[in-house]
Every structure is written in C-alpha cells, then in structure tokens.
Amino acid sequence: MKAKNKLGLVFFPAFDWAISPTHPEREERLLYTQDQIFEEGIEDIEGIEMFNPIIATEKDIQRVHFCVPDVMSRLTESHFISVGGAIKASQAVMEGEVDKSFALIRPPGHHAHRVVYGDRGFCVVNVEAVMLERMREEFGPLKVAIVDTDCHHGDGTEDIYWNDPDTLFISFHQDGRTLFPGTGFIDDLGGPSAYGYNVNIPLPPHTGEEGFLYVLENVVMPILDDYKPDIIINSAGQDNHYTDPITNMNFTAQGYAKLNHILDPDIAVLEGGYSIEGALPYMNLGIILAMAGLDYSNVYEPDYDKEKLKQSKDIAEHIKRVSEVVLNKWKNKDKLAKEKFKGVEIVQKSKQIYYDTDGILENQVQHFKRCDKCSGINWIESKADNGYNILAITIPRDGCSSCVDEGYSMYKNGDSKFTNIYLQDKANDKYLKG
Image (cartoon, rainbow, N blue to C red; front, side, top):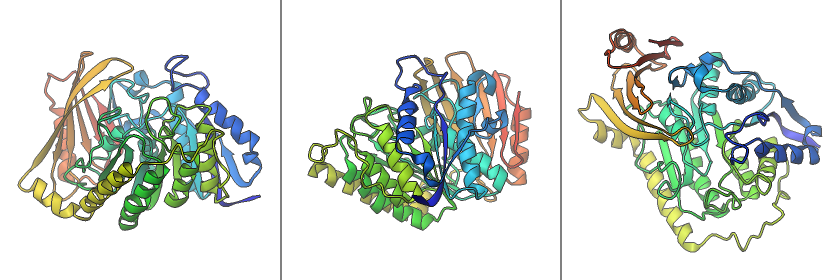
C-alpha cells in the first residue's frame, strides 16, 4: 500500500502532564489513538512518515502572546513540546519533506487569547497561531486559512487574528448560547483592517454528519475558493463526536474523514476530543487516511448506528438558513466594513475572560487604530483580579514607520498605573517587556 499524498505524522501524548488524573484533557486522549495506529499498520504504509516534535522557544510564544508576567511562568515543558510538534509538522510541509502533515499533540490551544494569565478551556498557548507565526518568520509572508472544526468556538484564534487580513479564520461549532466559551456569533466579523475575515458558523446541538458536510460544501469551500490561501490549516478538534462527554453533537469518524478529504488541508493539528476510546482512535484514523489519499470508507465506530444519528429536518433547515446568512456577509464584507467603520479612527472592543482552571477573572479593552498605510497599531489594556494591570502593544507585520514609532513611544511612555507593559513588534520580530 502506498499513500497518494506523502503524509507526516507527529505524536506527542504528553505522558507526564495533565490538569488532574481524572480530567478529560489527560494523556489517555492519545494513547488509544496510538494503539489504533499501530494496530492498523499505519507506520508501515509507504509514504507515511513519523516525525519527533522539536521544542518551541520562548520567542516563538512571544510572537503571539503576552504571557503575564512572562512566558516561563505560564508554560510547562509539555506546552513547549506540544507547540514544537505542530511547528515540526509545518516545517515538514514547507521544506517539502511531505505533502501534508498531521500533528497529534496535546495540550491543545485554540482557547488561548493574545493575553495569557493562565489556563482556560484546557488551553494556555495557542498552538496553531504560534506554529503559523513561526512559519511566517522562517518562510516569509503567507496568506493562510485556519478552519476550526472543534465543537467549541475557537475564541483564542479569533482574538489573535481579529485584525489580520492575511489570516482567514473560519470556525464552525456548537452554538455559543449552548456551550463554552459562549462566543462565536455570526455578526463577529473581525477588526477594521480585516472585517469579514473572521467567519463564525454556529450550529445547533445534535447537528450530524449531514449538517457539518453541508456547511463545509456550501459555505467553507466557496469562501476558501474566493480567498485563495497559500496554506490551509485544520484546527482539528474532535469533540463534535456523538460519544463526546462534554458536547451535544452527532458527528462521526466517517464524516470527519470526508471533511478532511473535501477540505484538503495542508496541515491538521489536533485540538479537543474527549471520548478517548469511542471516538478519537477512529476519527484520527479517518483523518490520517483521508489526508494520505487512501481509502477511508471502512472506518466506522463499533457502535455506529446511522438511524440513531440521523439529523432532524428542523436542524437541516436551520443550518441552511445560517449558511445563507454567513455566505452573504462574506460576499458583502467590503460594503459592510465601510458602513461600520465610517468616520471611526480607533475601534474599541471590551470583553471579560474567565480562566476556568486557574480561577482568574480578566477585564480588557482592545484598541485598533485605523491606518491608511498598514493594518494599524493596536493595544490592550487588561486588568485581572490576581493583581496585574497591563498594557500590551502590538505593531502589525505590515506596520508602517509611523505605527512603529507610535508603538515604541507608547511602550516608553506608558502610564505608571500599569504593573507590566509589553511591546510586540511583529514588523521587526522584537518583543519587549517593562
């Protein structure tokens, strides 16, 4: 047997790390998958190659996050290796060693925002974002689409790329009114320099294979065809499975394999998924076969029952209506942006974030300055109930000389009320902390 697409696999189960011994996000999440891969003889297929993760650096994290008070106090060794696994997967693709890659790693990361005080939604550092910014640093400018198929809205990835027109973020997920983190609504379209490039597709509980694939074929693929990214990344959470203990969806291993066949991502990165025995071994196997261009038609769970998982007509009709609205907003994004930001120089966005594992409550106000020459400088004023009050300034990758100068001036002359002041200069790949 030979893979049609040369596929790289990176495993990192993080044997020595878990939030607690019985927590859903623990090492067993990938051990059953690893057994399934060995049992099916995946390693023996010509064209499928295994890679060891590398270790991400502090600077990799600083390109994306403002860790409070600093990176080393927030991340464990397992987090650095998990991110390093994704980076290795991306390097294998970008350097031409493989056609595609799949990073089966933990801990996950898509709930980690730009500012990080601790662990929320099982995430401390945003794996895909750190991987992507390392790719851009190593291989130059890239126009990228991140398609998040985790059952939970990818609020951290949304936050990181809110104002970045070079990164299209699409998340289809269980409606935030029914599930953590309570975000991901259709009208959340992005910042002034990237309005419309943040695409949320909230789906009702009990959406099945039919609904997920309808959204993929009728919304996601048309948007991707229009956007024409250089790279497609699947933020491949698997907690939308019908046996997952913390969600309410009815997706299947066969459906996930079809999704990856149609989406055809360059890189997939494992996110959530907590049905350790009943779902992950089969869903990951389906993804691997689909990405390798191999037959996945016989990948089914032992308890799969098509009739029990059949999606209702009401859900199907609701999904069609949502899909029409989302696609219409994409097609009219430029017009909508002109109307929304007409005459506005600085766009403000306020939000409250609760770090559920660490019990920290954060209040922050984001400011996005509109600029005719670049994406515009932006800054965050953030205060948490653990005593920190920070100013976090970001100069965008395409930052003009005026925005660069303004960013450094803000950093140098920051108000004494702040306990910490940070500067993330993406234009020059520099990070300062005061």
